[in-house]
Length: 404
Image (tube, rainbow, N blue to C red; front, top):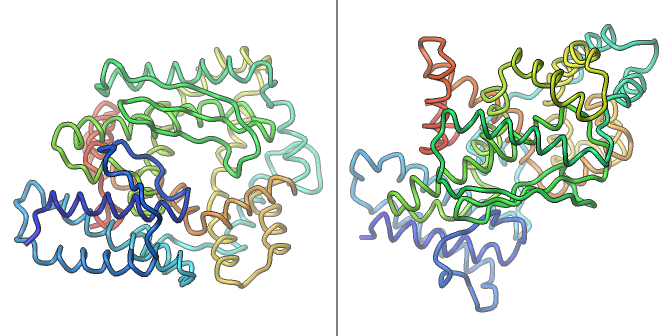
């Protein structure tokens, strides 16, 4: 009979070997260096057999002690998702809804055009001018673009404030740190590469103009209290504190991503409650970017409506993944309902092609985390929200665990 620690070790080693077949699979690893594979990649059929054997062995583990029950359940869910992903690498794809359930342990709601048409009607009433909503939005947003030569200054100010607010509520290692670099030619707008030892490299993609609201969004999502904090807490509490080495690896296409992306998105609201965000934007970020602060209030009314269109990504991804629409139709839908320019719609479709059902981790993940934490906070206290938010980051749960 295998121990839970041995099961965890085999999971990590198998994950690293799966990563030899897909450079995007292992997003972060800071476990033992000697576990890194040096041999040629194993055939996928062999990896599948080993995963099946490991899952079967997990059922032979004696009932874990109560303190490790959640650890055991999450590890088993992660193992089953790894098996699904190996099947996908072999060309055995699943319908979108099934992929959501089996890779991310989630069943997100699906909305159609009628739902998004109602949101577009709201947006139509907020934007100046008449005619095509997408064109008017594009023209309106031009005045909120952060000039390239001010981008780093604005982003550093945003992340410094996000960090200050986070450290008031979360204890992080004194040596935690990050580095920001500007990149281009990517399918994403920003990325956190967690390197271990509480250190991250945060990359900002400058392929497209970056509007002012993205400064706080990206600072909180990629940094504080988002991905950087999430990984640092896991490393501190679970890997170093408890020796649970399955958390020394982060497999991108796995159930833990729903919490990682969802908490990073919801963390924006935790760190910057709405009124406080508007004040900081008006007094600090708009002036740093050289944008008229008087425009802030109305701009964020528009932004709050725009956020409601986020599930349009899921609609397009689901139809495209299932073969119900072609590339041309997907681009048109992204332009109409996500209000992307044609160029940005092509970038977004490239993201969908590469990551498929992963798109649900942002919007559904955010809503799931928000709803779960709302049930944990009984006194409407923001400090209590920070406490349960931190607890969730340090003791991860999958979607079914949060719903259960």
